[in-house]
Every structure is written in C-alpha cells, then in structure tokens.
Image (cartoon, rainbow, N blue to C red; front, top):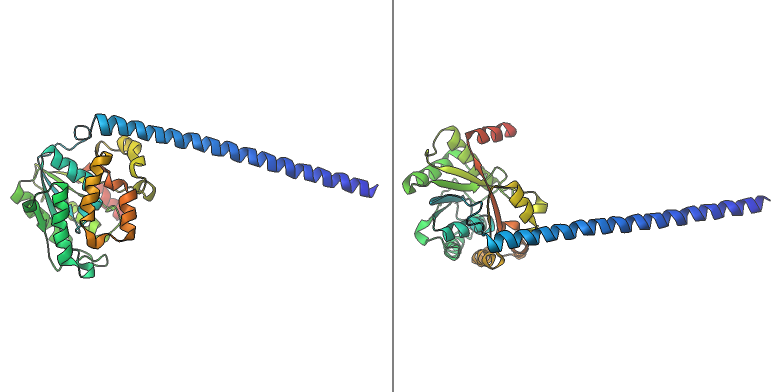
Length: 291
C-alpha cells in the first residue's frame, strides 16, 4: 500500500513538471511572437518614415534651420563629421554660409599637424570652403579629457567669430556633448556663460545637438521615428547622401581605428541630427540641474 501511494505521488509530480514545462514553452513562444510583431511593426514604420521624408520630402524643407550665416563650434578635428555631418551637409546644400570653429588641433597623441590637415580635407568633402574654417591652437585648450578648458577663453573666441562674421545661427554641443567628453561639454558651458553675461549678439539664434542614450545612438536609421516625434529641428540624410559624410570622416585617416569604423557603420549621428533651440531660461535650468 505504501509503495502504491508513493508511485501515485511520483506520477503526480512528474505530470506537474511536464505540464509546467509545456506551459512555459507555450508562454515563451507567445512572447517571442509578440515581440516579433512589434519589431516588424517598428521596422515597417522606419521604412515608411524613410520613404516619406527622406525620398519624397527631404528635410531641407521640413524641420530645417532658417539660417543664412551659420557657425558650427566643435572641440576637435573629426567632431564635424562624427557628430555634425548631416547638419553641415544639409546647410551647405541649402546655400547657407557655413563657418567652422574648431577649438583645438587634436594633439592628444602628438598628431596635431596631421589632424589639422585632415580637418580641411574633411570639410572640403562636406562642402565647407577652406576660408570658412578657423582652427584654434591655444595651449589653454589642449585635446585632453583630463584638462578643464577655461570657459571665458572659449566664450571670447566664439564671440569674436560671431561678431566678425555677422553670424545669425550658432550650432554646437549640448551639456552631454554627445559622448560625454569634457572638452565637448566645455563648449556648451562657454555658450551658457555667454548667455548669462549677455555676450551673444541679439540676432544670433543658438541651437545645440541633442545627446541621446546609448541605444538610440547606435540604432542608425532605426532612430528615425523617435527623431521625428521628439524633435522639431532635424536633419536627415538619404542613404546615398550619408556616403558623403562617411567619405568626409575617412579623410581623418589618423583617427580611423577599428572602433571608429564600427561607429561610422552604426551611429545615428552619421545620418541623423536633431537640434534644440536654447534660450537664457533653458541655460538657467541646465545650470540649476548641475548645482
């Protein structure tokens, strides 16, 4: 009798595990199917957005900046391609006068002279004339993430360019600096300093490049729907146009190590730029967050 009862108990336990395993497999299959539908749906949305806006209604007329004389401020040679390529390309295509202020020659590895030459080659590929490029070689602004760049020095350099070139639109990094590089963020804080000290010309509008999370950063064109929904000012390049930015980036031969090849392949910043107009109120809020 005891043996018979034990046998029934074991059979019941086996049936329980078999049923549990079967229900688990069924749940996982249903979950995988559900996720697959969402992924396919999102890919379809990406394709629709690409076809609608990239091929039929290019962003040169939708979400574009109304600018005639634009100053792009970057920290190092190759920033203009890695981060601002779509903006520079599209502004040049629109016929705007695009000027570039690069605050260092990228001499962190002793390649400053080489990287300076590469900057001119890359900008030529993007459509920026040679005489519109200003490269700063100031010992107070070394290419070094461990050195805090003096905000007042950067502000003075930017102010000089704005006034001497009669700039109506300034574009640069936001507080995150895209890659969290301290030199990138220093440019934003210099612009914030200019707002607070009222050093910006009245007619000059300021835009910053959105820093996005790591997932969006390496989604490539899959970030299109989010970019169009979350940003009113944006630049997007068609596949053939993005090749131009890639060629410009490859002009920076000294920087094309293996992980930058991956960056060029995967980063949204090679095909998508979303910009945010900032004001004194925005700057004050940003500074309060820092405090």
